[in-house]
Length: 421
Image (cartoon, rainbow, N blue to C red; front, side, top):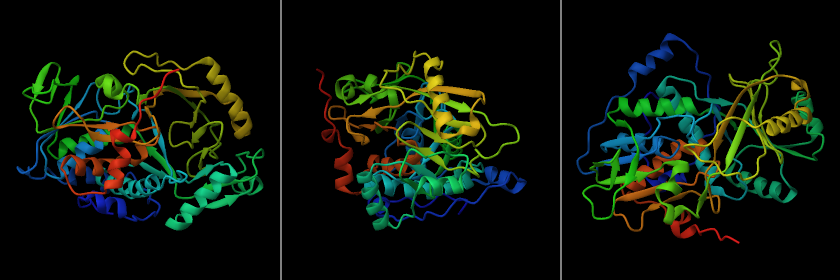
């Protein structure tokens, strides 16, 4: 690992890379680690051959894109209505899972693998711990398991297929007795969410980027600037709207039927004071047909309630957890983690996820607004790939040559409007 950012990659190089899967070394809270903050690389020179860029949204898409654009030499202004890591954002909350298993969708396995290497590099550069490698346990149907094994074998991604008894022998605090097999991915981990976006925005400003808190809107075609912030034009050569759950509101005719934003509720379960079995050092993350969990990093064992698609207003939606979902989580705890039965819910979070029509990202130029780009539709798997997405978006906005098949996968033309009965 290095204190300097990795060299800028072309999109073709990014897609072809086989970045290593080595586990992150633990970063100690020593004076030498803290000294890295002041030793971070300063602002790169502005490249006058590149357009000035405004990025709207400081989350997994926009925050990392702004940082990558600034490191490429562009003059960048990052605009967010509430600030990086705020509780309304889809990139808020305390943690996210990093895994490489995406069934047959090879591009996300490759991007997550690249992202893991970048998370390790970035946390050393930022001087703060962000990635906690602890593996991942997942349940799959027989067909899905066969597909996943074939892809991992081809890409040389390590995995094991375990019986419930083998799982119990390694992690006796977990009960998978109702399943025949469990897929174990040793390269998974937990990523700090809110802290990561704050750290990325601070690095962006340290490197000469400009941060604005304000309400951005696209300007009408033919105007003097491609967007306004709090009603005032913001002059720039390109504008990237990467504002997560707000994208369908900003572009209702274009995205209103391509992205939905359902509510999600998260519960953190505390452990007994002398029981460390549920910390990340001793327990993988878990995903099964009921829900998913993240092992305890410093906030409790995170459990996502299984909620049907209830719409969520990202500005005004109620952020208090529901009692009936707490009961659901307690039932899940009794089934999966018997040792946590009766332990308190120490924190809750209510957020939203923005789902595209087909689960793929939406990254494309606006068809009617020159110089305007759109990036979103994270579909529940963008955050872990944020550093990779940032590289890709920077290359797209700066018109670097890339992979046409990937560009087509994310294009608006590949996303169909939902039909309503």
